[in-house]
Image (tube, rainbow, N blue to C red; front, side, top):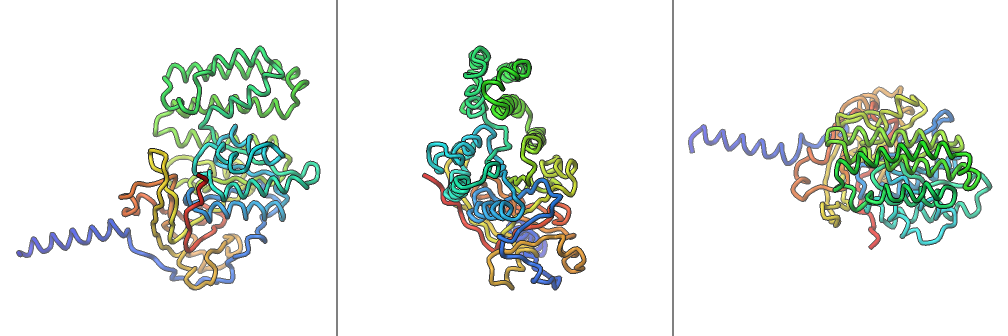
Length: 418
């Protein structure tokens, strides 16, 4: 073997190691104070000025992230009198969950399937919904919990709620727009022609004007709350058509813009208590690592310090990955960084760090103001992608992106409802 061939082989091996292992596993070098880490989530609380608390998840298919959203919300209910839970799920579908937690028919396992994504058809989500229903059974008047959705990617349940109000309060309008929207279905939405989608947008704008003109009459029959939610259901139909029409480059920014507008809508129509929102880290973070303006960035610009963003991460992520055919399979990826390596020195499997509590600690500030490679998994990845860290990690500066983080050593797959 000549020298040139040998060097070529060495280069190839080095590149292969880089590709399959990333840039190596970083471990904590700063002697941070572990006593600053919180492991009892029941004591979690935010300052009185905060209007919205966002909890992100590094993967939708991990059990611990589903359980943590329940634990954080329960703490906010107890410690900050929060009443509203908003998920990265369909606006109209979540209204069925809200009906259930207020004594509606069915089961928790059934209604979580209405949120719009199969990733939420889990026993962990059903457990949260069942807890909210039990809480409401004994809640004082005006202190009941609400379950809402801020996403805009579905038609069916939004149409159902809209027409349930119009059938009673404005039957002529109802029949007119049932016909106009007849082709708008969840099953067909990605195959609708540009003409149909544009026509649907024009029809929604016309409906909204007619509803506004008839607001007094509709409210007299169905009430102001029903009118407001029916109107926003119609608006969601418009937003769904608009996002389907958008190209890939604009889709993410447009979707996050509409989710931001939904959160603002809930702020305007809520009771003034702290709102809890839950979605992927990429939506919740105060800055986006993906090159578009995300929900959390818009909330930060609008609310400033009144928005509190919490991210999540894990060193070892075993999760339910959804394939293009809709089926789930269990995948596992690993990503070690300075934040999750701190768990090597702890008995707990996770911790919460409030960045404001360590603002004067030079060691913590060095860690939080430097780049960290976090796991970022959406609905799923292909089998070969788990060998390339670029497909499931992203670099962020923690202090720029979140106000705090919940970090796990290991997370496991959600328990899917069959």
